[in-house]
Length: 633
Image (cartoon, rainbow, N blue to C red):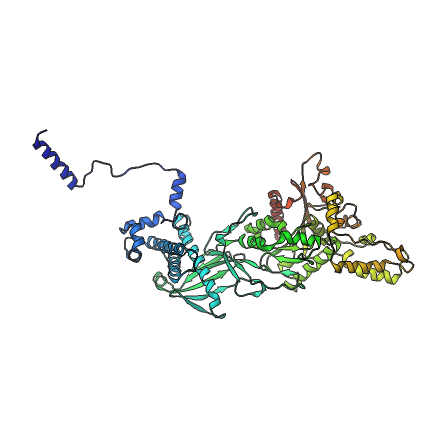
């Protein structure tokens, strides 16, 4: 090739370069997997530790790069805040994420040390920009309901609130108990408006646990309500319980917190350095009004319950209670799962032998997780010593429930005190049935009383035993569910292992003294030495035998006609007919009750109450109960 030709080619290439032309395509296209697309679209500084695509796009519009924005943060956020090339929604959402990213990086660098003021300020800035996006832009939250960006910004806000409230909680010991405002990191924080009720009427929790940081084993589901605010578990200060008081208010309470920034316009909100804490009980409040908008209140309905169970120590305590050893419980307790609400119906759950409220782990959680049931019901769990005879526990539980109802509703007119529902498993099912039954005179036959017993002694004997052998149905209860309940006893109570365990059981000294006094009354004047009828004191395992005199006498006591009742039975290794089956412990013939509104047989071992099928049936029955009350005149 001649030199002249080469020169012309070189000049042509130079001209093409000067004109900005390129022989290569400027735009390419490729396919991505659906999962990659979704992950990329939803990724943000919280979930993937990088800025979301929407924030990166906003930076691109104002000619900023992610790396340079992190290096020159003040200049970067100033440019984003002032640029006319961004809409308010673009600007505010980007600033909320940028400030949150700054706070998270600072928190990681502090490696568990206490949050410093600069980090606290960054979280407050993020919360403010997110708050402004949600409530002070042209569109309302409802108009953006289907947009991923609003979900992201709500997440920025809720996480920032969580971190700010956690830091403020640590400051409380340094504040005056009657504080109205506090100065933190250049911000004025106003005392929260709170109607969250803690046990013992405590004003400040002893511990504040972010619910988002908790994971649970043993609970099938964690029930949340997506919405505005950060979810917490508020732990009440520990107090020594009064043994004379049977009820126990919840020590672990669900709580939702939010930050409300001062100002009535967008400019006011962006200029303010004043913020008020908002604290709400999510069981009572479904929504909250913020910035003139009614929005769903975020909630976690499982976290408080899960923390309570995890810290309860029920597993070992229930065994000590069964054996009558030190560290067990001696009297029944009525444990409220939520702060008392006079306008919610009450469900009372009674566990079985050698058990505790842990018997209802998933049952109570599923009831509290069901939106309709949660709106209309509250759960009380009766925790009682399972070593005592059934008659003694029946009398003590009735006394505890009556005292609890009188304490919370002296007039007995609240919705919570009417149309109550009893749910009992195993021995708890037997007790639940007796709580809605009439004894009449039928149970006196279990006493070995001589015909020649003097009338005065016979009268004193009736007075002593009336609380155990003579009772009427609880008038507050109109529905009951019995699960795997040995109403007619079980032959397994005579099994060698059961007898061995029964021999280990100790009864309280008070019960032994009471029975000794009754034995003395049974003696007639003619009795001498060993001629008096033998009064053997049964324990709970004795009472569950199908040959026990009390269980036989109590098996057919009439249930109140006001009470609708249902049975749920387990069928373990089904062979032959249902009538000949059992759940491995309780025969079907013992668990079955004629006249029940419904009966459901479920393939299950004796712990049928924890099966999904049983829980679905319980939810159906509770909905049925609501429907029947709505239709009642």
